[in-house]
Amino acid sequence: MSEPVTDLGRGLAAEAIRTGGRGFLWLVAVPLTVCLPLLITFGIAAVAERFAAIPGQLQVPLVYGEVSLTDPAGLRYLWTVPIYAFTACGLGIAVGSVIRTPPAAIAALLFWVYVARFGRNGSLFYFVAVTGAVFTVATTAAQWRRGVSPRRGAAR
Figure 1: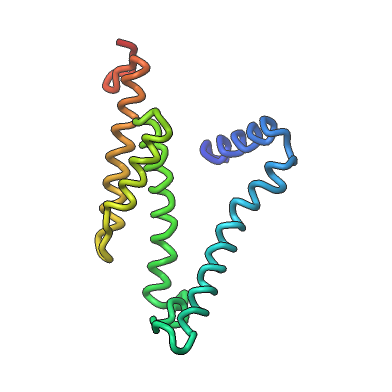
Figure 2: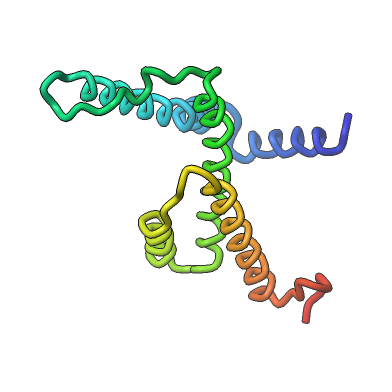
């Protein structure tokens, strides 16, 4: 068995022991973290479709009616959304690490959300690059705070 797979198995076993095994966390909270966002997303989609189909209202094109998983738009959605989610988590961790006060970190993230405008092309690469830069700054700042030189890995 390869070393990363062995490390993953050990980590999962340690986490199960740390959280008490098959308790509330693994039987209720973890499935809810997966299912609840899916239910909310499908609910929003259903409401948007319903409003788009009401006659006499402001007519907008049906949002989800023409898209399938084999369309270019559907395929793009399948690979971009996980990347956006991963980088958004990384950005949140990095900003929280650099800005140690929770309200200020939230304000910085909200500023980013409402000020940064993404275009159709290139926005994913821009977002990944900015997140990588902020995460690098956060890692360097954390090492500097602990008194570890980022170049040598030793205490100053």
